[in-house]
Amino acid sequence: MKKTVLILFLLLLAIPCSSVLAAEQTGNCHCFRNRIYNPADKYAADDYLLTTVFNSLTAQHFSISKRQIVMMKMKGGVPHNDLLIGLYISKCTGTDVSDLLAQKGRGSWKQVLSSITSQPLPQSDCEKTWQLIHDLPATEAAEIITQKMFLDRFSVSDSIFRSLQAQGLVSREIALVLVLAGHMQVEPEDIYIQYKNKGLSWSEIAYNFGLEPADVGKFAGQSPSDQK
Image (cartoon, rainbow, N blue to C red; front, side, top):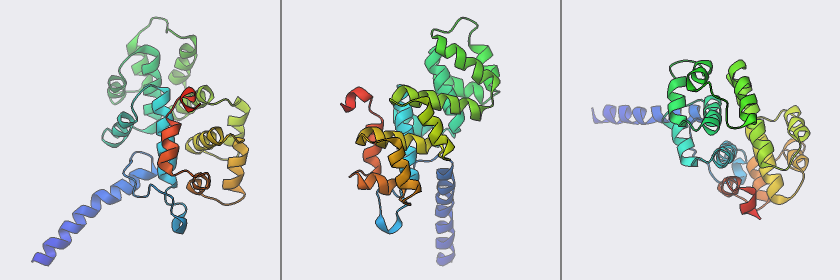
C-alpha cells in the first residue's frame, strides 16, 4: 500500500515537470534546469540563454521589470505575441499592460484598440504601428514591434536585421547575436558564422567569450549608455 502511494506521489510530481518542459519550448516558462554552459551537453543551456536575453531586452525597452514579464508568461500564461503587442500599446497610451491583456483575453486586439481612445496618439511612430497592429495578424504585428525594438536598441541597419532573418534565425536568436556582437565589438555575421558554420551552440559561443548565460542576460538588460 505504501509503495503504491509513493508511486502515485511521484507521478503527481512528474506532471508539473512535464508541463514545465513543454512550456519551456514555447518560451512561456522560465523554470529552466540548465542555466550554465556544460561542455558535455553543449546545447542544454541554449533555451535559457535565448529566453533570458530576449526578456531582458524587452524589459529594458518597455521600462518594465524582467520579473513582471516572467510572471505574466508563467502564471498568466500570456502568449509571446500578445505580450509584445500589449507592452507596445501600453507604452504608446499609458494604459496599464495588465488591463490591456485582460481585455484581449475577452476579445481581439482590434476590439481593445477601438475601446481605448479615439484621440491622436502622442507619438507619430505609435500611430503608424497602431494601424499595423489593427490590420495584421498578431504574429506579424509582434514581429514588427520586435524589429523596432532591436533597431532602437542596437546600432545596426535594417538590412543587417533582415540578413539575419534570411539566414533562418528567429527573433530570440537575432537578439542574442546582436547582444553578443555589441558587447564583444564584433560584427553580427561573426557570431552567426560560429553558430552556423562551426557548429557551436549559442551558450558555447557565449562561454568562449567568457560569459555564462546569466551574464549575457544581465548586460542585455542594460541601456547602451550603462554599458560604456
